[in-house]
Length: 547
Image 1 (tube, rainbow, N blue to C red):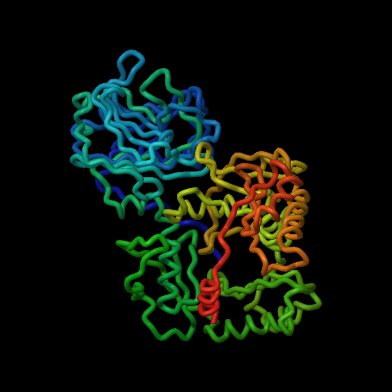
Image 2: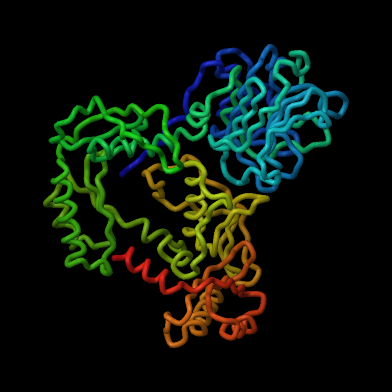
């Protein structure tokens, strides 16, 4: 499936008081697109590139108009933020309130370290916090995050990427009560305490509402893009479509077979459908629908079978690579292959106007680049990049898949989540490339065919003690020691490189008499983690399941 652009974030305007898209390319004005003429004044040195505003951490901030919260009993503050991995603390993403001397004097603010929103009528001694139960939790750096705070009545809720991270039902300070409605220190990127740091990173799409958005609205604004892809695919699959994609001019499109007999203008939503995180959508995309001018499903299947038979006859996948799929946007079947013209020319002639042949760019990237099937996952056996808490939403999952793709494509040893600084990519000690200029894998898409608008910027470093060959050597030695003569029935063994601690981890049920020589041969390089050997009953259960 071909995807060319991502849908925009949800345009929820009810109650919108202020919106800075921060998509300017120059100037000292953060333009308010809410229609209320609340433009902000940019101070210090700002970086503009049309995709958010860069804050330099030393003097950049936006001064918002006075009295934004006057008369408010409820509020929502929501925005995209990218925290520079070198950002110190303490700092505010934003602060709405007043100052007295060098201190805050009544305010509402949110910060990423530790991740929380605080409300106070005076200073920090009287603040009311809305923060996760894990009080050490920090917002990941080096990747875009969506942050939302909603408050109505005594309930304040803090969201990350549309997922609730913290809730308090003991918030007794209404937004409009701060300063009696008068607030003259309303800042974006600056704290209300002069001793705090200025924010360093990027922000975009900063909004303030005079009401608390519902959870579904928060999700729509925060991760609507990723959720819509999953819902669009579900609609297409449930209704028997050939493909779904995003047209840059008209939005989501679903293409049906030319002989489709159903009503393409009345798509049925799959009953009881939830996304992979168990969330039930409150609304569904309404895509443009059309029938393929030239393909039924059987015709596409026949064409794909013909391509496979020509390029990989008798199931031979070792001679030439092949990836074949239907491109709904251009109503063509695409075959990506490294087979020569002498093999593919007959196909191009036979299926002119229906088949497009492309080089297999994913398997054969630019010189010096790796692939997901190659070194990292195949030889090093490192764990897939993921936050310690796992995936709670579609946007987080997408971003960590991108981190892994960056690591794979740039020949890294591993990628992982550092709770203090966010995504980290570790390279071999003898790596000769530029670890500060990671190349994006060409043509990479998400599992739903989405071309990402943004890529994470992980912290990078080289292993203090390992080249790839040295890790491979250790792996081979472990297998020889634990599974002597290839005997894999005596002891179980699993091996992976732990980038966080720069060690090779060996998971095995072998006794110390077997593993101690490894620890002696590779001091400070190997960690043995004992696992329990499966019981006969476990083996029987496994065999029954396999049967």
